Length: 488
Image (cartoon, one colour):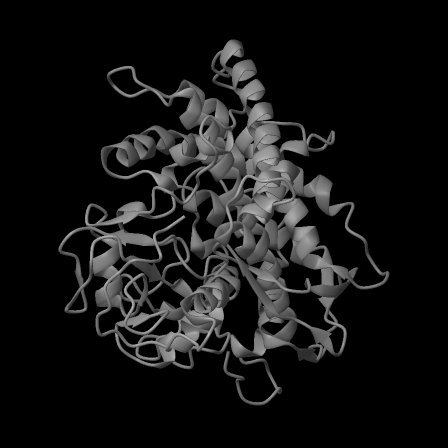
């Protein structure tokens, strides 16, 4: 839990604390809808804006120069080491050992030990397993019936891919319990009430989080022991990420401790599963709302089969339209609209303003991606903007930037470029007229408040008009033929 009280006031733009309910209500509103709060602050202009005026407890940072200053100096602007805490001695408390909650040399050591799990050989194995898992999962998607929650389908698909690639478990045989436990833990921990009232008391959601974490990490501990006892996988066999983490050592022979392994196994799954699931769902929605872009994408995909990405980095020239669609989807609707908070060290200065030690800084990819000085018509979904265009450093942040760029970014990028073509070649999607599509942000993941309800139809090439949409999604993206953008 970040420090949010006890700071001396200093001149900072932002909304005033409300009468009677004061600062706590502003903080709750921010936690409940950080996207709306950040966009409102962004519209004020300037490089800094406080969630509560003149209060440096929580300050949003805008513009490439200020964002670079924060993200490129991890020693001065550190991750919050209390982002995950549990009762002393509890398994929930082990999550404080995760890469997102450590700094300095500890973070560097974790990153070095995790890199082999995302190296060239590992990625080739993940590509094959991703395609195989998707083949089985997509065969069970409901077709031709009543509208269904497409975001639930993509979440289950991404969960199965993550369980297979990260844990090596047979998801086709139904081994998804670990994934569902991890998803349940995230849902509890990211509820604003849990964040503001982390009390381990009967009836409190935090108590439930402690119980779920105990079950999840207990199962993971058993899995780690089995994999450690089995030894490294044979050179010609698939090696999942957890196996690679267990058997990777530094030059001096050191490796991740048991607590560190359990923490990384948990956070890797959570990060990989949620970002892939939501990017797929938002992209499917955006393509349905932009039939011309969908048809161009299908034209490109038609000659190809479901072939996993070959060994090596993704080659955008294989499917440039698809590549631009994914880039633009992650720009307009980034699955991670706000990065983890950075905590100021002594003497920290951003945008010419000195901030006190302990002040929390928020960098928002969603706001960065809407800078009209960099992206013309920033609220429109225009994949062709990426033809011959490279944005300035620290202005395109779907996986963060700087020394703490997401360690699993390559995995997510590869998975998206395997899964999305497999989905688009099998199904067509329709938004029912009048469907309600609104955002919900929990932790730092951009979800659907009421789900993404669509009809899933057999594949065809009949071009359809987009479904009429209501809801606050129109505050984030201009939808064709629906009038002006509605402010958040």
